[in-house]
Length: 219
Image (cartoon, rainbow, N blue to C red):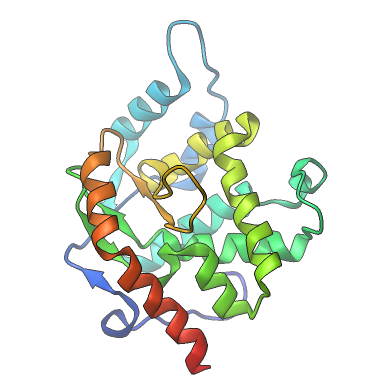
């Protein structure tokens, strides 16, 4: 993070941690070589992202490197120049900073290619975690969640998201079903089994999100 030092005790922070190692690509490489990519009639952007990841990804066992990379990813995706086009009333630069900070922590979450959720912490559930950490009221949280989902629905922001998330070795997938019900999401490898991912998340989601909300009650 750019301000202060973040300390995480794995034994206390993670709800589940049955794997080690994260996939990353240096941010400078992503900016120089993936950002200029354009979709063509023959090659979709997603295919280019997949090929880029295959050629450049590496595994790190240093969570600090993951967070540093993620801070660059989300600082870019939630930058202030998006404010005039978000279409969500009342969102400020400070709100975008909150989005970037909480999203950075979500990069420590991990799902395997077979869809198994192997690492998950409170920031998986972005909206509820932001509400607890920043003492936000419900209307503000709903607006932040709407901005976050805009990265899936707004095509320009979706393109940015595809490119930027190659730095974290995959693509952003969301756990919500037919409504934005705060199931959170994760950067997953391309070709991850979404059926297994959905089923595993459904098994544990209520227990995990209740734990996040209890943290707020304890403050």
